Amino acid sequence: MSETSLHSESPEDKIEQVPTKEEIFAVVGVDIEKCSIVKEKKNEKGIYFIEFTVGGKEGEIVGYEYRRRGEFDGGHTAGGYSSSGTSIHEAIYNKDGDFVKFPEHIAEYNHESGEWIKV
Image (cartoon, rainbow, N blue to C red):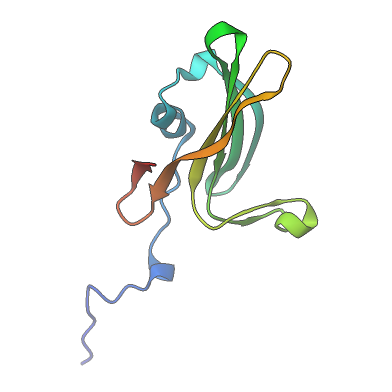
């Protein structure tokens, strides 16, 4: 009779927890109904890329980009998406579309704990 350890799961055996759209919007503290979704990509597991904007102060536009870890649509070399970690970036543009604040990493998803870490 063989014994099986309950703690012998490899990282590949664990089920990846994919954040929902509502969780992504909650992390950045914006109302989903006040946002404009620029681009959204998903597969059978859920969203792997979403870009959305919301109005900022003095006519500025705050842009957010969520990327799930992994390689999708063939990766960067094929015009697709790839990311080494699940994260959210934020950028701020003026009304002319010029950067006021260049894209900055603001949150990282911890797949082990299922929690977001603000950076």
